[in-house]
Length: 145
Length: 145
DNA sequence: CTGTCATTAGTGTATATACACTATTTAAAT
DNA sequence: ATTTAAATAGTGTATATACACTAATGACAG
Image (tube, rainbow over all chains, first blue to last red; front, side, top):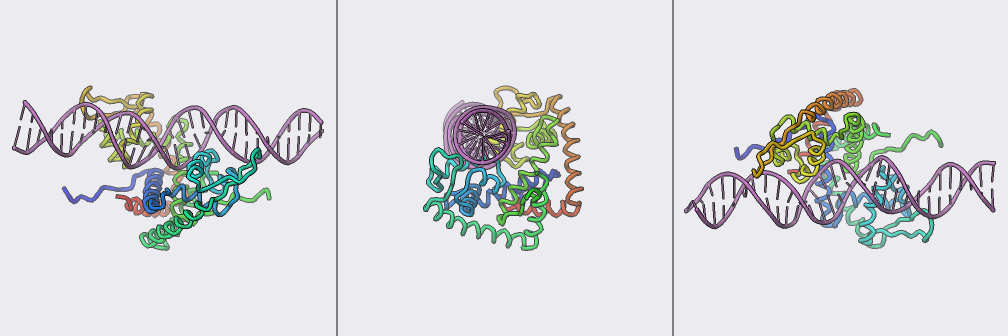
């Protein structure tokens, strides 16, 4: 049958449903951010640095709730592209990351796109539903120390 | 302050909240499945093969809603560990994957653990809430073709 | 038959994630 | 002042994911 709508029934597995929804919304945000040349994860990194700068890798990892070693790699490409820089003196223990001028400009552009994506989701699901979703997701996150 | 509870406020970003919840629940299921020597993603693979066998990589990818090339790699370790096998005749185009005897035994064990994990989540969030969550996640998944 | 086209599988590369481990620097204790 | 402990950064490896691309097989038109 030509017009069979794609069969996308939820799985019985709650974990799989969450993983799929996460992948789907990541894809949506990624597509919208494509004109900026950023993926949503990279945008998240820049936005966090913007609000914390100057910041060490460890503190950034704490704030983002990601493993520190994950950030070491993810920061690399942003540094190579000249969106962030380390203003710590050489030979010191802690790095001090901040946005470059270019990085700030890009982040502000991306924030506008992100804002549209946020609004789209509220329009799509409804304000109450998004609030309910956020609450449920927060409880799930709390499962992990 | 010693007793400050960890600050885990939701982000303003719906995408980030979903990504974090997905990581959290994946971690929970992974931990519970550790005695089986499986991660939840690997278990998902085995469980899907079990219900479709014998199955080609392409059909498995369709059913799991993952990219086919993702499966090529993820299947490899399961094959190397002898949990799945390809019963297609050599020189034919399509693979025919199925569980080995060992693979089936492991999958059944893991299904019991998975079932406990599912029950735990319902106890934790409540039956109605899990249903609501599933509905919301399903709508989000529908955002992507 | 033969040539074209769809199907199926796989590789190369990039991103994202975390654990186990090492190395270095700073702070604290004695 | 020296030793010890904590903090900070980084590497090696494994898993998970997808896109662009290549290669081989099978089906069908003529």
